[in-house]
Amino acid sequence: MALPAAVSAVLCALVVLTVSGTPAGACLLCFTSYTERLRICQTFAGMEGPELEKCEAAFTAAFGGLLDAEISEEIAPPSSGVLDYDERSHLHDSFTQMTQSLQELATAQGSFEVAFPDAAEKMRKVIMQLKEVQDVTVTRGDQAMFSCTVNFQLPKEEITYSWRFAGGGDLTYFREMPRAQGYLARIRPVQPTHRGTFSCVITHDQRALARLYFFLNVTGPPPRGETKLQASFREVLRWAPREAEVIESWRPSLGELLARPEALTPSNQCLLAAIAALASAGVTLLACYLSYEFP
Image (cartoon, rainbow, N blue to C red; front, side):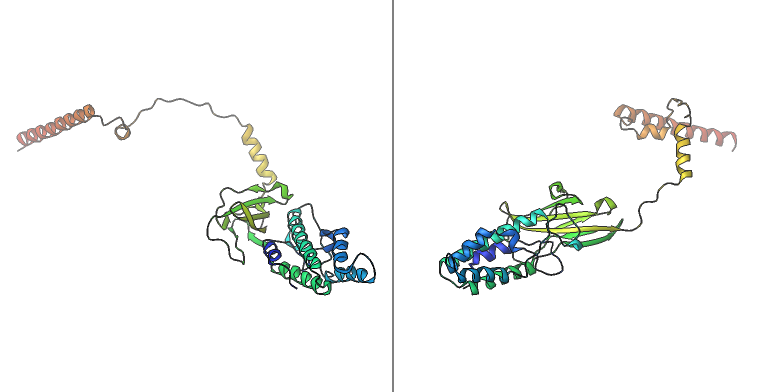
């Protein structure tokens, strides 16, 4: 008997996990209590007896491939294979949904020999479909680009993307990136200070649908440092006496005067026209005088 469809819907929303080399990264013993597991088996097999012990053993064996998960307080590069607290909370919710579904199956008198492997297989398939933290390597000075896309259908309306950056610190230090809008985020030019973890959250109607993480590695030589000679030279220049400032009166040229906004007023235009007319008349008189004196 298959698990309810609601479980798959909840699990599909968990898009991002920092998993190790194998897809099994969720620990049954980490996210379920002994009391929860015992209650499920008691519903399946009775309050006590050999059948109860068989149920408990089958429960543990079914999730044998999902035994190890390392929880980290800090964000680590993808190669470390650790889960952060944000991802742990999502996994905890998923296992809670799974245990509730198993309890419903047990109440309906289903078989634990079928239900446990089926539940474990569904968890394994979901984890295999999740996206790992994407490792992005960019040379210093180039452009880094992140694409916030998922492999399932998103609603066509009211989808928002929010980007955050945490560097190499704790998840609580994620800060908003207001300039990053839409499903693409660009950083140009990339500097060593940009190294760290970037997060994209896809929301619909104020509900988070998916979280994607990117770890940016910045390569290339660091900025060239100053040599001792350069440092000494700068120190000498810093303490050198500066020349006294001399305030000179402004003597603008005719072109500078005409370029000023207040220069071409109506009265000034009339004055310039009169000067031009007098100059033209003077040139004409001079030409007549020269032609008369030197025929």
